[in-house]
Length: 117
Image (cartoon, rainbow, N blue to C red; front, side, top):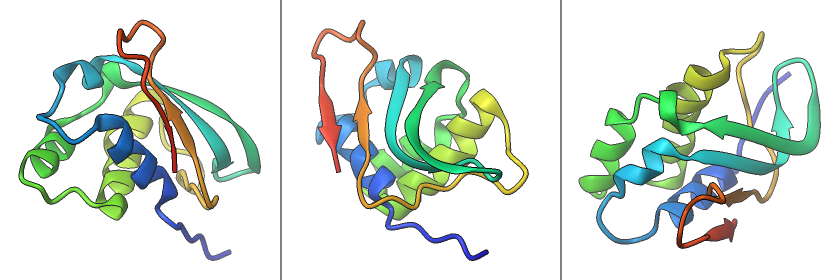
């Protein structure tokens, strides 16, 4: 099976992080991701809750701060450095083949931002 991505998750993540300077609080929040999720053994529309507190954020933060973070890189790094650090790798790795995703901020965030891509 060939796994493809439209990098819609990457677009939603970039939108959720905004256009300003990197916010270190983004590394300490939960990421509810809603959309078509391929966990290696099943593909389904669902909510995947990711805890960013255990993520390895250096590569994402550096790319963001240098202006090099596009939707493809955001998605790849988030999978490798945040999702897999939080819940581990699956038999075939994580994929997000859907056309759009909603990424909401942890409800404890004061700005309550939610975006869809």
